[in-house]
Length: 475
Image (cartoon, rainbow, N blue to C red; front, side, top):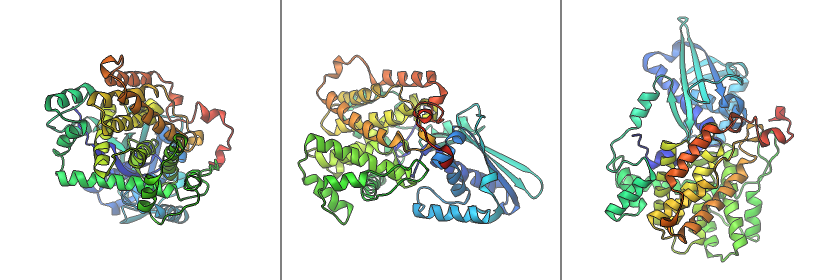
Protein backbone atom coordinates (compact mmCIF):
# COMPACT_ATOMS: atom_id res chain seq x y z
CA UNK A 1 0.00 0.00 0.00
CA UNK A 2 1.35 3.42 -0.95
CA UNK A 3 1.89 5.72 1.99
CA UNK A 4 1.95 9.49 1.71
CA UNK A 5 2.68 12.03 4.37
CA UNK A 6 0.39 15.05 4.44
CA UNK A 7 3.55 17.03 3.67
CA UNK A 8 3.69 15.21 0.33
CA UNK A 9 0.18 16.44 -0.46
CA UNK A 10 0.46 19.96 1.00
CA UNK A 11 3.89 21.45 0.37
CA UNK A 12 5.70 24.69 -0.37
CA UNK A 13 6.28 25.29 -4.06
CA UNK A 14 6.33 27.82 -6.84
CA UNK A 15 3.72 28.61 -9.50
CA UNK A 16 2.12 28.26 -11.88
CA UNK A 17 1.61 24.46 -12.02
CA UNK A 18 2.57 21.53 -9.83
CA UNK A 19 2.50 19.02 -12.70
CA UNK A 20 3.79 21.33 -15.45
CA UNK A 21 6.21 23.49 -13.47
CA UNK A 22 7.24 21.87 -10.19
CA UNK A 23 7.23 18.33 -11.64
CA UNK A 24 9.49 19.10 -14.64
CA UNK A 25 11.66 21.25 -12.38
CA UNK A 26 12.10 18.30 -10.02
CA UNK A 27 12.69 15.98 -12.98
CA UNK A 28 15.54 18.22 -14.17
CA UNK A 29 17.05 18.20 -10.68
CA UNK A 30 16.71 14.40 -10.53
CA UNK A 31 18.26 14.02 -13.97
CA UNK A 32 21.31 16.05 -13.02
CA UNK A 33 21.67 14.16 -9.74
CA UNK A 34 21.33 10.76 -11.45
CA UNK A 35 23.81 11.62 -14.19
CA UNK A 36 26.46 12.91 -11.78
CA UNK A 37 26.30 9.72 -9.72
CA UNK A 38 28.16 7.82 -12.45
CA UNK A 39 29.46 10.50 -14.82
CA UNK A 40 31.33 13.78 -14.71
CA UNK A 41 29.43 16.92 -15.64
CA UNK A 42 32.62 18.21 -17.25
CA UNK A 43 32.16 15.57 -19.94
CA UNK A 44 28.80 16.97 -21.09
CA UNK A 45 29.03 18.82 -24.40
CA UNK A 46 25.35 19.18 -25.34
CA UNK A 47 21.89 18.63 -23.92
CA UNK A 48 18.40 18.55 -25.38
CA UNK A 49 15.05 18.38 -23.58
CA UNK A 50 11.95 16.79 -25.12
CA UNK A 51 8.45 17.63 -23.84
CA UNK A 52 5.54 15.34 -24.71
CA UNK A 53 1.76 15.33 -24.48
CA UNK A 54 0.23 17.85 -22.12
CA UNK A 55 3.68 19.15 -21.15
CA UNK A 56 4.15 20.21 -24.77
CA UNK A 57 0.63 21.44 -25.47
CA UNK A 58 0.39 23.74 -22.45
CA UNK A 59 4.06 23.89 -21.53
CA UNK A 60 4.60 27.49 -22.59
CA UNK A 61 1.60 28.71 -20.64
CA UNK A 62 2.62 26.77 -17.55
CA UNK A 63 6.28 27.75 -17.75
CA UNK A 64 7.49 24.17 -18.24
CA UNK A 65 10.45 25.35 -20.30
CA UNK A 66 11.39 27.87 -17.61
CA UNK A 67 11.10 25.21 -14.90
CA UNK A 68 13.37 22.82 -16.78
CA UNK A 69 16.00 25.53 -17.19
CA UNK A 70 15.88 26.33 -13.47
CA UNK A 71 16.21 22.66 -12.53
CA UNK A 72 19.11 22.03 -14.91
CA UNK A 73 20.78 25.09 -13.39
CA UNK A 74 20.56 23.51 -9.94
CA UNK A 75 18.01 25.91 -8.48
CA UNK A 76 15.51 24.47 -5.98
CA UNK A 77 11.87 25.55 -6.37
CA UNK A 78 11.35 25.14 -2.62
CA UNK A 79 13.87 27.82 -1.71
CA UNK A 80 14.62 30.00 -4.75
CA UNK A 81 13.85 33.69 -4.49
CA UNK A 82 11.15 33.78 -7.14
CA UNK A 83 12.08 37.35 -8.11
CA UNK A 84 15.39 35.95 -9.42
CA UNK A 85 13.74 33.61 -11.95
CA UNK A 86 13.37 36.27 -14.70
CA UNK A 87 17.00 37.31 -14.18
CA UNK A 88 18.34 33.75 -14.48
CA UNK A 89 16.09 33.05 -17.45
CA UNK A 90 17.18 36.23 -19.23
CA UNK A 91 20.83 35.34 -18.74
CA UNK A 92 20.38 31.89 -20.30
CA UNK A 93 18.42 33.29 -23.23
CA UNK A 94 20.92 36.08 -23.87
CA UNK A 95 24.10 34.02 -23.51
CA UNK A 96 22.66 30.90 -25.18
CA UNK A 97 24.47 28.99 -22.46
CA UNK A 98 23.49 27.18 -19.29
CA UNK A 99 25.56 26.28 -16.24
CA UNK A 100 24.53 22.76 -15.33
CA UNK A 101 24.02 22.25 -11.61
CA UNK A 102 25.91 25.54 -11.04
CA UNK A 103 29.12 23.72 -12.06
CA UNK A 104 29.58 23.19 -15.79
CA UNK A 105 28.69 25.62 -18.57
CA UNK A 106 27.61 24.39 -22.01
CA UNK A 107 26.13 25.95 -25.11
CA UNK A 108 22.34 25.74 -24.84
CA UNK A 109 19.71 27.58 -26.87
CA UNK A 110 16.27 27.28 -25.23
CA UNK A 111 14.62 28.00 -28.59
CA UNK A 112 16.06 24.88 -30.21
CA UNK A 113 17.28 22.67 -27.38
CA UNK A 114 13.86 22.42 -25.71
CA UNK A 115 11.68 20.50 -28.18
CA UNK A 116 7.88 20.58 -27.89
CA UNK A 117 6.36 17.39 -29.30
CA UNK A 118 2.80 18.68 -29.64
CA UNK A 119 1.43 15.61 -31.40
CA UNK A 120 3.27 12.91 -29.53
CA UNK A 121 2.60 11.36 -26.13
CA UNK A 122 4.43 8.66 -24.25
CA UNK A 123 2.27 5.71 -23.20
CA UNK A 124 2.68 5.74 -19.43
CA UNK A 125 1.39 9.26 -18.69
CA UNK A 126 0.34 12.43 -20.57
CA UNK A 127 2.97 14.49 -18.72
CA UNK A 128 6.31 13.18 -19.99
CA UNK A 129 9.72 14.69 -20.61
CA UNK A 130 13.09 13.29 -21.66
CA UNK A 131 16.61 14.62 -21.20
CA UNK A 132 19.11 13.73 -23.92
CA UNK A 133 22.67 14.29 -22.65
CA UNK A 134 25.58 14.17 -25.11
CA UNK A 135 29.10 13.64 -23.80
CA UNK A 136 32.51 14.30 -25.34
CA UNK A 137 33.10 10.55 -25.79
CA UNK A 138 30.16 10.57 -28.24
CA UNK A 139 27.78 8.81 -25.88
CA UNK A 140 24.11 9.77 -25.52
CA UNK A 141 22.42 9.30 -22.15
CA UNK A 142 18.61 9.50 -21.93
CA UNK A 143 16.52 10.06 -18.83
CA UNK A 144 12.72 10.02 -19.11
CA UNK A 145 10.37 11.19 -16.37
CA UNK A 146 6.63 11.44 -15.81
CA UNK A 147 5.09 14.29 -13.85
CA UNK A 148 2.11 12.54 -12.30
CA UNK A 149 0.43 15.44 -10.50
CA UNK A 150 0.95 17.48 -7.36
CA UNK A 151 4.69 17.81 -8.05
CA UNK A 152 5.25 14.04 -7.87
CA UNK A 153 7.74 12.65 -10.41
CA UNK A 154 8.63 9.08 -11.40
CA UNK A 155 11.38 7.94 -13.74
CA UNK A 156 10.71 5.59 -16.63
CA UNK A 157 11.68 2.05 -15.80
CA UNK A 158 11.60 2.82 -12.11
CA UNK A 159 7.88 3.42 -11.58
CA UNK A 160 7.50 0.16 -9.68
CA UNK A 161 10.50 1.05 -7.54
CA UNK A 162 9.10 4.51 -6.89
CA UNK A 163 5.83 3.02 -5.77
CA UNK A 164 7.71 0.61 -3.55
CA UNK A 165 9.62 3.48 -1.98
CA UNK A 166 6.32 5.22 -1.29
CA UNK A 167 5.28 2.15 0.68
CA UNK A 168 6.05 2.80 4.30
CA UNK A 169 4.91 0.95 7.35
CA UNK A 170 2.47 3.14 9.21
CA UNK A 171 0.80 2.22 12.48
CA UNK A 172 -2.58 2.99 10.90
CA UNK A 173 -2.40 2.42 7.12
CA UNK A 174 -5.17 4.14 5.20
CA UNK A 175 -6.24 3.56 1.61
CA UNK A 176 -10.01 4.05 1.88
CA UNK A 177 -12.11 6.63 3.67
CA UNK A 178 -14.02 4.00 5.63
CA UNK A 179 -10.76 3.00 7.34
CA UNK A 180 -10.48 6.49 8.82
CA UNK A 181 -13.86 6.05 10.44
CA UNK A 182 -12.95 2.58 11.72
CA UNK A 183 -9.70 3.70 13.38
CA UNK A 184 -11.31 6.78 14.90
CA UNK A 185 -14.28 4.85 16.26
CA UNK A 186 -12.07 2.16 17.78
CA UNK A 187 -9.82 4.68 19.52
CA UNK A 188 -12.26 7.54 20.15
CA UNK A 189 -10.14 9.89 18.01
CA UNK A 190 -10.82 12.80 15.76
CA UNK A 191 -9.32 12.53 12.27
CA UNK A 192 -6.42 14.84 13.17
CA UNK A 193 -5.46 12.56 16.08
CA UNK A 194 -5.24 9.59 13.72
CA UNK A 195 -3.22 11.48 11.12
CA UNK A 196 -0.79 12.76 13.73
CA UNK A 197 0.05 9.23 14.85
CA UNK A 198 0.92 8.28 11.29
CA UNK A 199 2.96 11.44 10.75
CA UNK A 200 5.00 10.65 13.86
CA UNK A 201 6.19 7.49 12.09
CA UNK A 202 8.03 9.78 9.65
CA UNK A 203 9.19 12.61 11.88
CA UNK A 204 9.16 13.79 15.47
CA UNK A 205 6.11 15.49 16.97
CA UNK A 206 8.12 18.72 17.21
CA UNK A 207 9.02 18.56 13.52
CA UNK A 208 5.43 17.85 12.50
CA UNK A 209 4.24 20.81 14.54
CA UNK A 210 6.90 23.10 13.08
CA UNK A 211 6.14 22.06 9.50
CA UNK A 212 2.40 22.61 9.98
CA UNK A 213 3.12 26.09 11.29
CA UNK A 214 5.38 26.75 8.32
CA UNK A 215 2.64 25.78 5.86
CA UNK A 216 0.20 28.21 7.49
CA UNK A 217 2.82 30.95 7.48
CA UNK A 218 3.41 30.49 3.76
CA UNK A 219 -0.32 30.41 3.05
CA UNK A 220 -1.19 33.60 4.87
CA UNK A 221 1.82 35.46 3.43
CA UNK A 222 0.80 34.34 -0.04
CA UNK A 223 -2.72 35.70 0.52
CA UNK A 224 -1.20 38.94 1.84
CA UNK A 225 1.07 39.39 -1.18
CA UNK A 226 -1.75 38.70 -3.58
CA UNK A 227 -3.99 41.17 -1.77
CA UNK A 228 -1.36 43.88 -2.05
CA UNK A 229 -0.09 43.43 -5.61
CA UNK A 230 -1.69 45.17 -8.57
CA UNK A 231 -0.91 44.84 -12.25
CA UNK A 232 -1.46 42.62 -15.27
CA UNK A 233 -0.44 38.98 -15.36
CA UNK A 234 2.13 38.07 -17.99
CA UNK A 235 1.39 35.65 -20.81
CA UNK A 236 -0.52 37.68 -23.35
CA UNK A 237 -4.11 37.39 -22.09
CA UNK A 238 -3.85 40.76 -20.34
CA UNK A 239 -5.59 39.43 -17.22
CA UNK A 240 -5.80 42.20 -14.61
CA UNK A 241 -5.14 41.19 -11.00
CA UNK A 242 -8.27 41.79 -8.90
CA UNK A 243 -7.52 40.69 -5.35
CA UNK A 244 -5.70 43.88 -4.33
CA UNK A 245 -8.55 46.12 -5.50
CA UNK A 246 -11.13 43.93 -3.75
CA UNK A 247 -9.07 43.91 -0.53
CA UNK A 248 -8.80 47.71 -0.59
CA UNK A 249 -12.52 48.07 -1.18
CA UNK A 250 -13.44 45.67 1.64
CA UNK A 251 -11.10 47.49 4.04
CA UNK A 252 -12.67 50.82 3.05
CA UNK A 253 -9.28 52.40 2.49
CA UNK A 254 -7.61 51.21 5.71
CA UNK A 255 -3.98 50.14 5.32
CA UNK A 256 -1.81 47.82 7.40
CA UNK A 257 1.94 47.35 7.50
CA UNK A 258 2.12 43.57 7.75
CA UNK A 259 0.10 40.39 7.43
CA UNK A 260 -0.49 39.94 11.17
CA UNK A 261 -1.94 43.45 11.64
CA UNK A 262 -4.05 42.94 8.53
CA UNK A 263 -5.47 39.60 9.71
CA UNK A 264 -6.02 40.91 13.24
CA UNK A 265 -8.15 43.73 11.84
CA UNK A 266 -10.17 41.43 9.58
CA UNK A 267 -10.91 39.19 12.59
CA UNK A 268 -12.53 42.16 14.34
CA UNK A 269 -14.97 42.75 11.48
CA UNK A 270 -18.57 41.65 11.58
CA UNK A 271 -19.16 41.36 7.85
CA UNK A 272 -22.45 40.64 6.14
CA UNK A 273 -22.93 37.33 4.33
CA UNK A 274 -22.17 39.05 1.05
CA UNK A 275 -18.95 40.54 2.45
CA UNK A 276 -17.85 37.17 3.81
CA UNK A 277 -18.24 35.69 0.33
CA UNK A 278 -16.21 38.55 -1.08
CA UNK A 279 -13.43 37.99 1.46
CA UNK A 280 -13.30 34.27 0.61
CA UNK A 281 -13.13 35.08 -3.08
CA UNK A 282 -10.50 37.72 -2.42
CA UNK A 283 -8.24 35.22 -0.63
CA UNK A 284 -8.64 32.58 -3.35
CA UNK A 285 -8.03 35.08 -6.14
CA UNK A 286 -4.98 36.45 -4.31
CA UNK A 287 -3.28 33.06 -4.07
CA UNK A 288 -3.88 32.05 -7.64
CA UNK A 289 -2.86 35.41 -9.02
CA UNK A 290 0.41 34.85 -7.16
CA UNK A 291 0.55 31.33 -8.56
CA UNK A 292 0.03 32.55 -12.13
CA UNK A 293 2.88 35.03 -11.61
CA UNK A 294 5.48 32.35 -10.68
CA UNK A 295 5.03 33.27 -7.01
CA UNK A 296 5.67 31.28 -3.85
CA UNK A 297 2.57 29.22 -3.02
CA UNK A 298 1.56 26.08 -1.15
CA UNK A 299 0.59 23.15 -3.35
CA UNK A 300 -2.69 21.80 -1.95
CA UNK A 301 -2.82 19.30 -3.57
CA UNK A 302 -1.79 21.07 -6.81
CA UNK A 303 -0.78 24.56 -7.85
CA UNK A 304 -3.80 25.06 -10.08
CA UNK A 305 -5.97 24.52 -7.00
CA UNK A 306 -3.61 26.22 -4.54
CA UNK A 307 -6.10 28.94 -3.59
CA UNK A 308 -8.94 26.75 -2.28
CA UNK A 309 -7.44 25.48 0.97
CA UNK A 310 -5.88 28.84 2.00
CA UNK A 311 -9.14 30.66 1.24
CA UNK A 312 -11.18 28.28 3.41
CA UNK A 313 -8.52 28.48 6.13
CA UNK A 314 -8.70 32.27 5.87
CA UNK A 315 -12.49 32.06 6.28
CA UNK A 316 -12.15 29.73 9.26
CA UNK A 317 -9.48 31.81 10.99
CA UNK A 318 -11.12 35.19 10.42
CA UNK A 319 -14.82 34.49 10.67
CA UNK A 320 -15.48 31.27 12.64
CA UNK A 321 -15.74 31.66 16.41
CA UNK A 322 -13.21 29.64 18.39
CA UNK A 323 -10.63 29.34 15.62
CA UNK A 324 -6.96 29.58 16.54
CA UNK A 325 -3.47 28.64 15.35
CA UNK A 326 -3.62 25.18 16.94
CA UNK A 327 -6.91 24.38 15.22
CA UNK A 328 -5.36 25.44 11.91
CA UNK A 329 -2.75 22.70 12.31
CA UNK A 330 -5.53 20.16 12.81
CA UNK A 331 -7.27 21.59 9.76
CA UNK A 332 -4.16 20.90 7.66
CA UNK A 333 -3.82 17.37 9.02
CA UNK A 334 -7.37 16.45 8.03
CA UNK A 335 -7.09 18.11 4.62
CA UNK A 336 -3.83 16.34 3.82
CA UNK A 337 -5.22 12.91 4.65
CA UNK A 338 -8.26 13.39 2.44
CA UNK A 339 -5.99 14.49 -0.39
CA UNK A 340 -3.80 11.41 0.01
CA UNK A 341 -6.79 9.10 -0.41
CA UNK A 342 -7.72 10.79 -3.68
CA UNK A 343 -4.14 10.33 -4.88
CA UNK A 344 -4.14 6.63 -3.95
CA UNK A 345 -7.60 5.76 -5.28
CA UNK A 346 -7.96 8.18 -8.21
CA UNK A 347 -5.67 11.04 -9.31
CA UNK A 348 -4.69 14.59 -8.49
CA UNK A 349 -3.43 15.23 -12.04
CA UNK A 350 -5.57 17.38 -14.36
CA UNK A 351 -3.79 15.76 -17.30
CA UNK A 352 -5.28 12.46 -16.12
CA UNK A 353 -8.61 13.54 -14.68
CA UNK A 354 -9.47 17.09 -15.68
CA UNK A 355 -10.04 19.88 -13.18
CA UNK A 356 -12.15 17.62 -10.93
CA UNK A 357 -8.77 16.16 -9.94
CA UNK A 358 -7.51 19.57 -8.84
CA UNK A 359 -10.27 21.98 -7.76
CA UNK A 360 -12.55 19.05 -6.90
CA UNK A 361 -9.99 17.36 -4.69
CA UNK A 362 -8.91 20.60 -3.00
CA UNK A 363 -12.53 21.49 -2.30
CA UNK A 364 -13.11 18.05 -0.75
CA UNK A 365 -9.97 18.44 1.38
CA UNK A 366 -11.05 21.87 2.61
CA UNK A 367 -14.64 20.79 3.26
CA UNK A 368 -13.63 17.85 5.43
CA UNK A 369 -11.12 19.95 7.37
CA UNK A 370 -13.58 22.78 7.96
CA UNK A 371 -16.31 20.42 9.14
CA UNK A 372 -13.89 18.69 11.51
CA UNK A 373 -12.64 21.98 12.98
CA UNK A 374 -16.18 23.31 13.39
CA UNK A 375 -17.08 20.48 15.74
CA UNK A 376 -18.25 17.92 13.21
CA UNK A 377 -17.96 14.22 13.81
CA UNK A 378 -15.65 12.02 11.77
CA UNK A 379 -18.63 10.91 9.69
CA UNK A 380 -19.70 14.49 9.06
CA UNK A 381 -16.20 15.47 7.96
CA UNK A 382 -16.07 12.61 5.47
CA UNK A 383 -19.56 13.50 4.32
CA UNK A 384 -18.45 17.08 3.70
CA UNK A 385 -15.62 15.84 1.47
CA UNK A 386 -18.06 13.65 -0.44
CA UNK A 387 -20.51 16.51 -1.01
CA UNK A 388 -17.76 18.80 -2.25
CA UNK A 389 -16.40 16.29 -4.76
CA UNK A 390 -19.84 15.12 -5.86
CA UNK A 391 -20.51 18.62 -7.17
CA UNK A 392 -17.21 18.84 -9.04
CA UNK A 393 -17.54 15.53 -10.90
CA UNK A 394 -16.74 15.92 -14.57
CA UNK A 395 -15.16 19.37 -14.23
CA UNK A 396 -12.90 19.83 -17.23
CA UNK A 397 -9.45 21.38 -17.45
CA UNK A 398 -9.54 23.81 -20.39
CA UNK A 399 -7.00 26.59 -19.76
CA UNK A 400 -7.13 29.35 -22.36
CA UNK A 401 -3.78 29.51 -24.19
CA UNK A 402 -2.49 26.93 -21.70
CA UNK A 403 -2.24 29.58 -18.97
CA UNK A 404 -3.43 29.05 -15.39
CA UNK A 405 -5.43 32.27 -15.56
CA UNK A 406 -8.78 31.67 -17.28
CA UNK A 407 -10.76 29.90 -15.89
CA UNK A 408 -8.34 28.64 -13.25
CA UNK A 409 -8.11 31.68 -10.97
CA UNK A 410 -11.87 32.11 -10.56
CA UNK A 411 -12.37 28.35 -10.17
CA UNK A 412 -10.42 28.49 -6.93
CA UNK A 413 -12.93 30.96 -5.56
CA UNK A 414 -15.79 28.70 -6.59
CA UNK A 415 -14.09 25.65 -5.08
CA UNK A 416 -13.60 27.46 -1.77
CA UNK A 417 -17.22 28.55 -1.54
CA UNK A 418 -18.40 25.03 -2.43
CA UNK A 419 -16.19 23.63 0.32
CA UNK A 420 -17.72 25.95 2.91
CA UNK A 421 -21.21 25.07 1.70
CA UNK A 422 -20.45 21.34 1.77
CA UNK A 423 -19.13 21.58 5.32
CA UNK A 424 -22.22 23.46 6.50
CA UNK A 425 -24.56 20.96 4.88
CA UNK A 426 -22.69 18.05 6.46
CA UNK A 427 -22.67 19.69 9.90
CA UNK A 428 -26.47 19.84 9.82
CA UNK A 429 -26.91 16.31 8.45
CA UNK A 430 -27.04 12.78 9.74
CA UNK A 431 -24.37 10.83 7.81
CA UNK A 432 -26.22 7.59 8.49
CA UNK A 433 -28.88 8.78 6.08
CA UNK A 434 -26.41 9.63 3.32
CA UNK A 435 -26.82 7.71 0.08
CA UNK A 436 -23.29 8.35 -1.25
CA UNK A 437 -20.06 7.60 0.59
CA UNK A 438 -16.72 9.33 0.09
CA UNK A 439 -15.22 6.09 -1.21
CA UNK A 440 -18.03 5.79 -3.76
CA UNK A 441 -17.52 9.33 -5.02
CA UNK A 442 -13.74 8.81 -5.30
CA UNK A 443 -14.38 5.66 -7.37
CA UNK A 444 -16.84 7.61 -9.51
CA UNK A 445 -14.37 10.42 -10.00
CA UNK A 446 -11.74 8.01 -11.29
CA UNK A 447 -14.19 6.32 -13.65
CA UNK A 448 -15.24 9.76 -14.90
CA UNK A 449 -11.60 10.63 -15.47
CA UNK A 450 -11.07 7.51 -17.56
CA UNK A 451 -14.16 8.28 -19.65
CA UNK A 452 -13.33 11.97 -20.16
CA UNK A 453 -12.20 13.04 -23.62
CA UNK A 454 -8.47 13.79 -23.64
CA UNK A 455 -9.04 17.33 -24.96
CA UNK A 456 -10.53 18.27 -21.58
CA UNK A 457 -7.43 17.13 -19.71
CA UNK A 458 -5.09 20.13 -19.63
CA UNK A 459 -4.40 20.23 -23.37
CA UNK A 460 -5.96 23.63 -24.24
CA UNK A 461 -7.68 21.79 -27.10
CA UNK A 462 -11.26 21.87 -25.81
CA UNK A 463 -13.82 23.88 -23.87
CA UNK A 464 -13.11 27.54 -23.19
CA UNK A 465 -9.64 27.16 -24.65
CA UNK A 466 -11.04 26.89 -28.18
CA UNK A 467 -14.07 29.13 -27.83
CA UNK A 468 -12.47 32.32 -26.55
CA UNK A 469 -10.70 34.34 -29.28
CA UNK A 470 -7.11 35.09 -28.23
CA UNK A 471 -3.92 35.68 -30.13
CA UNK A 472 -2.13 32.51 -29.05
CA UNK A 473 1.12 33.74 -30.61
CA UNK A 474 1.22 36.48 -27.97
CA UNK A 475 0.87 33.93 -25.21
